[in-house]
Image (cartoon, rainbow, N blue to C red; front, side, top):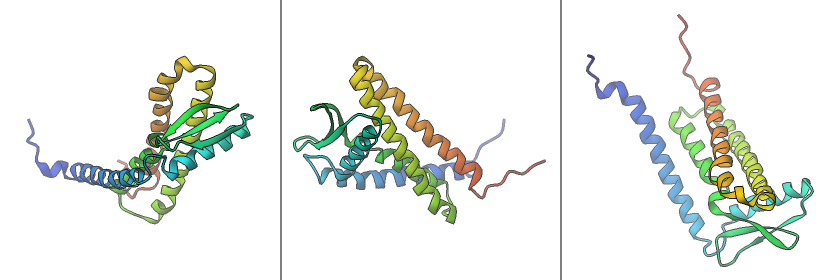
Length: 181
């Protein structure tokens, strides 16, 4: 049986420490940002809600947004009725933080990373808008499925997209090359 030393796992441990450190620090900063706007919603949540309303209008649902001044939510309103309340956790920023923390922790920082991060964030934002728009539709037409689709189904799809972006980054843009035998 082979004895393992800490040296063998040093790159993995270093990656995990960097990833967790970056995630915790940026998430704490983001938390301070969000709480600065209490009791109402933060501007990012309002903008994401507005973008969703624009997408829904493009699909034929005449929606508007309305910030709630007593809760940290922005409501999507259709036919005078609030259909969906969008909280800070639904704006996609936390997923973007996880995405960026992985890329920086995996390193090294390169020219490719400077364009890949904004492209990835744009893809995540677009997928999140689609997720919220589909949740709007579920809330309107299949309200019994709202909990499952919100908590598990659409959230899983968003994280699968992030995972695919990570794989794309690792395989295509990192300097680690495979040695062929």
